[in-house]
Amino acid sequence: MEVYRLSRQKFADTLSGKGSALKGARWNSVGVELIYTASNRSLAMAEVSVHFTLATLPSDYVMMTIYIPDDINVQIIDIQNLSPNWNTFPYIIKTQIIGDKFAVENKFCIYKVPSAVTMGDFNILINPNHTDFSKIRISNIDNFPFDIRIFK
Image (cartoon, rainbow, N blue to C red):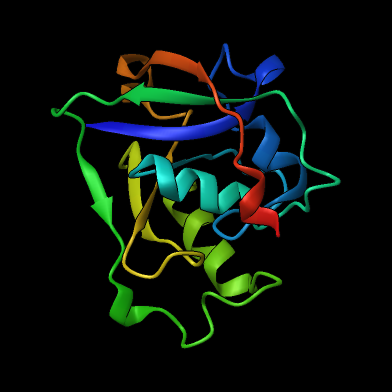
């Protein structure tokens, strides 16, 4: 499986969950490491663009293509069990608890969760502390200039 991640150039040479652990996010609390990726490039762009305006958009983004071997088991969230407001902003604690449990239990390296930005698409969370993480690699890094029409 290939997944995608938009990243600042200076952070694109390694995969770690340190960035998400600093502030927390929808699926993890502060201190819990998870790597957020998207199932397609468009979703990766949408997930990043909701956090910026044209004036605040950094110019050094790159699109990372990440290879996940097919023999790595994937846990898929049961969307039916999510709270009706799971996709609101700011994030609710309930989704962070779900992601924290995934990371702490450490049974799976990959967690497929719904995107709050693009209904019907999925984000792929990677647990960098799972033993299968060593099999995952960055296969490509390309410059990614945003089309400014997105921010108009």
